[in-house]
Image 1 (cartoon, one colour):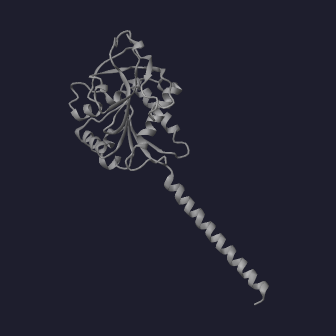
Image 2 (tube, rainbow, N blue to C red):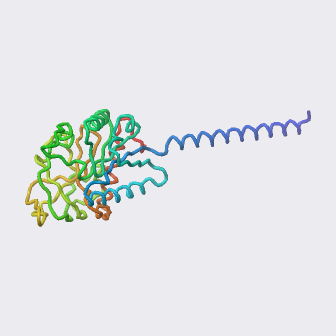
Image 3 (tube, helix red, strand yellow):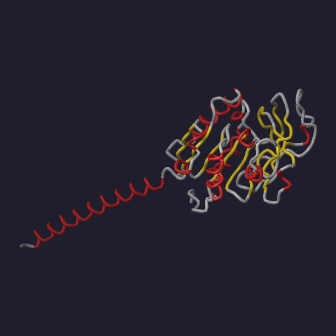
Length: 272
């Protein structure tokens, strides 16, 4: 075999090797992308049979969060069947969202408690935390920071919020105060702030008081966004009507809260 033929043979072998390595690289890259996206899964519970203002909020919330999934960043599944709150259904989700509903039956309550105690994530809005002295679910009251629903303003109104920690990931980049859109505001007694394991992110400014025309919050401490730091959770007391997602500042806090709950998963921060 001549020198030229040998060189040609080597060139062909090199080309075959290069094409093989390129194919392998593309396959591995595709596998990597499939493993990376979507980053996490959310299951959101909502009801179609609650008061109309809470249904309006649910419709807006579903649209808001679905738009955030562009690019397959995460999966946002929804269900209006609270019976889906069972161990088999929820085990593959990194976060459960309660938009305008909450567990009702003993089986649903037990499944939720086990999920949270095993490191699951929760993001609740407004009525998702409603409880009173007839609720008879001590674990849930403790989970929310020990507060029982005390009173609310009526009609729904905008209100000035005070951001209490400008460095926390949930509120970083927000102004010290901002006017939140029209909402019905709940006050709890005792205030969740009294618990050492509760981190308050934002609360109603005292400048709002007296707040309301028919039902009035005259004074007192009214946390609006907080976390029980014993769990991976955030509660936001917004969710009444169709105005909630009309403010960029509040929307920023909502997105940051979702991201923070996901990022604090003990299994690892999916954003890194």
